[in-house]
Image (cartoon, rainbow, N blue to C red; front, side, top):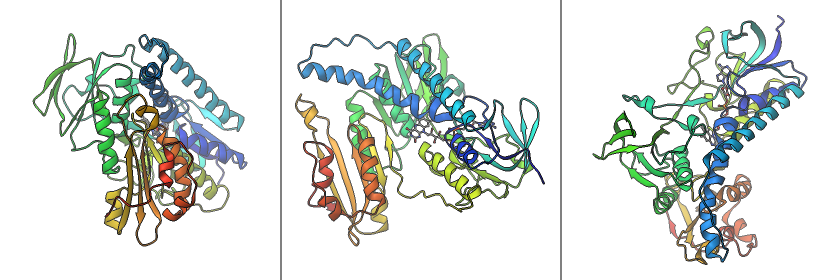
Length: 451
Ligand code: FAD
C-alpha cells in the first residue's frame, strides 16, 4: 500500500518539531500540522516566555542589592508594556526559526488542526486528507480550571503573557511548580500576590525540606501564601474579582489565575476511529517505544503524561525516530531526569527525594543550609540549601537537591555525575571550586542524619 507521506506529525511543539526534523533527515517524507503557533507550549506560552519573565522580575532584588554594594542606582518602575512588546517580538522571532528549521528540513507544514480519520489517514481543518505510513501524535496539553461557578473570570498561564496591564493584585490558585513560579515572578514585578493551595505544603512530589525552604523564602519575599486553603466562590465586581476562600477570607483581586493542573490534548482527535487507548487522566497510553495500541500510531510528549518537560518530549521524539526510521528499537529512559523550578529562590533537583529514598532503603542525608557570601555581605538572611541523599549500602548518590540562585545550572552538571552512578566518595574526590556555593556539594563530610 502506498501513502502520501512516511510520517505525519500532529503538533508543532517541542516533541513534534524535533521528531519531524530528525525523521526527515533520514530521507523520510514528512508532514506536520500545527493548529496554533509553531514551537508549541515551551516556546509560545511556557518555558521561554516564563524564563524571560523570571529574568525581568529578578531585577528588583538586583537593584536593591546593588545599592547595598555601594552603587548609586535608581530603579524607577517596571514598564510592563515595554517588556511585553520585547517579549512578543522575541516569541515571533523564535516561531520563525522553528518554521524555517522545518522547511529547511523539507518537512511540509500545514497550518491546520489535524484529526484522525483512520489508523493511516489524517484529516485537516483546512480541507483535505493525507495518508501516512506512520502517525505521531504530539499534541501536548492544556491548562484546566476547576469546575466552579464563574471560573471563566480567572486566567491561566496561557493568558498571563498576554495581559494588557499588570494587575495591582492577583490571587494564584495552585501549589505546583507553575503556580509557585508565577507567584514569585509577579511578586518580583511589584504585583501584590496571594496564593491559595489546598494541600499542606506547596510543590507536592518534591523533597519536603526543599519545599519548606522555598515556601519560607517566598513568604519572606512578600508572597501571601495560604496553604490548606481553596477558592470557594468568585464573582465579577466593578473593581475586580471578589473571592471567598475556604478559610473564610473575602477579598477583591485584580486578577485570579488558575494553575490547577494540565490535561493532555486528546479530545476530538478522532482517536475513536483507531485502537489508540486513553488512560484515566485522558493521556494516550504508549509502550516504552512510545507506540500506541494502534501499531501505525505513536505518541510523545505531554499528551502521554509521562514526564511533562520539554527535554523529555524532545528525547521521546528522537527515540521514536531511532526506533521507526533508523531500525534501532530505542526505549525512552525516564530515570534520573534533572529539572529546575524557577521560583525565587530557584530549585534544582535530580533523583529521589529523602522521603522516597528512605522508603526504598537505608540512606544517609548530607545537608547544609547557609547564607551565601554575596547576600550575607549586605546583611540579607536568605539561605541556600544543598542536600545529597546517599545509599548506605552502595554509597551511590540517589538524589541531589539545591535551593539557591542558579540551582538549575548547578543541577545540570551534578546530574551528569549522578546519572553516571557517582558515589559520595567520588563526589568527595573532586576538588572544591572556591569561593562558590556549589563547593558545598563536595565538602559535606558527615551525614546530618540517617533515614
Ligand atoms: P506542546 O509543546 O504543548 O506542543 C503541542 C502542540 O500541538 C501545540 O502547539 C498545539 O497547538 C498543537 N496541537 C494540539 N492539538 C493539535 C491538533 N489536533 N492539530 C494540530 N496541532 C495541534 N518544561 C521544561 O522543561 N522547563 C520549564 O521551565 C517549563 N516551564 C513551563 C511553564 C509553563 C507555564 C508551562 C505550561 C509548561 C512548562 N514546561 C516546562 C513544560 C513544557 O512546555 C512541555 O513539557 C512541552 O512543551 C511539551 O512538548 P510537547 O511537544 O509534548 O507539546
